Amino acid sequence: MIDLHMHTVFSDGELIPSELVRRAQVAGYKAVGITDHADLSNFEHIIANVGRFAREHGHFFDVTVLTGLEITHVPPSLIPDMTAKAREAGAQYVVVHGETVVEPVAPGTNLAAIEAGVDILAHPGLITDEEVALAAEKGVCLEITTRGGHSYTNGLVAALARKHGAKLVIDNDAHAPRDLVGPEMRRAIALGAGMTAAEIEAAERNSWEIVQRLMK
Image (cartoon, rainbow, N blue to C red):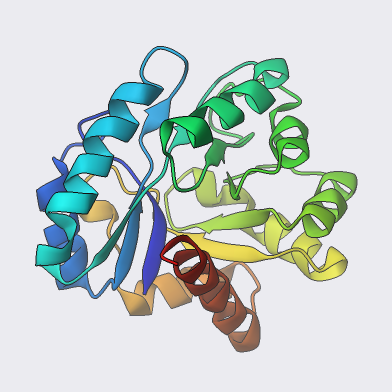
């Protein structure tokens, strides 16, 4: 398994990177991405410290550790610039906190993230046909999330991704130990969203492709 959306004490997670990665290893994950919530005030601090951990200690866990970032509650008009700044500062990939129905995310966030060409649009909520079609065109992965609340709209995301040929990934959005679901629950949540076995396998391949691309 791979998970490309996880949080540590560098934002609102409960665990330091070492414990998060160790727990992920025990749960069966082979690669993880740490993507703490970020805006202009903290993105450099997150990238520098998570990156140092990943480079110097990550391999001791027998887990591939990637340094990402989740741009969160940033005004849509600023997302392209924040994406560029994150990449310049050393983020291996960029996630944007999408328009989940359980938080007051600014309208237009989904579209701005897709237009900016981020790697993953997390829990995109009531995403539109037009946005999913553009995500397919630009190669932006849409997230099926195992996290409660954010998962309410998984079914819509899966259906529109199928309709438009957009890529999906499956992530925990882990903030605490209880969020690290194992393979059976991960698969059950995806099936509950209406995904077929073939679509689940394709989503897993999409995650592997991101990891392989970043590790070259």
